Amino acid sequence: MEIKETPEMWVVRCGQRLRIPDVRQAAAEYSALITTQIIAHGLEADGPWIFISHNLPRDSKSLFDWQICRPIRKPVHWDETIELHHLEPIIVASRVHQGSLRSLFTKGYAPLVAEIEMSRHHFSGESREIYHGWNGHGSSYHNIEIQFGLSR
Image (cartoon, rainbow, N blue to C red):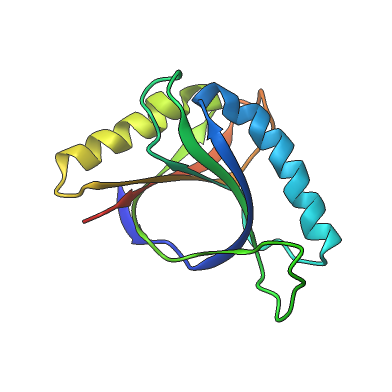
C-alpha cells in the first residue's frame, strides 16, 4: 500500500448509477462518446482512463455512483458546449494490480482494503481505478492502479 496525493487534473467525464456487472457496458459506451467529444472539440488527451466510484459496494447487486473520466490538457479557451471537470488532488491509499480483470477484486481490491482497515486511515467513500495498461476484454494482463480516497 502506498499513501500518496493524486495530481490535480482536468477531465471530460460521463457517469451513472449502476451495479458492478454494468460497468463493462457503460465503459464501452461512454469511452466512445468521450473520445468523440475530445476530438470534436480539438482537445488533447493527457493521461489514462480513470473510473471513479462513490461508495463502491462489496457485492454485485447494489447500486453505486460511477464515472469514467479522460484527463485532458486544459485548453486556454474552450466553448461551453463541452463540460470540463476539475479534479482536485486527494490523499489515497494505492496499489497496482497486474493481471486479469477476473482477479481484480480478489488480488487487487481485497488486499488493499485489508491493509487500509488494519491501518489508522479511514475511507472517504471515493475510489478510483487508473488504467495504465489496458489490453482489451479477455486479456490475461492489465496494469490497473486501485486508489481509495482517505478522509484521514
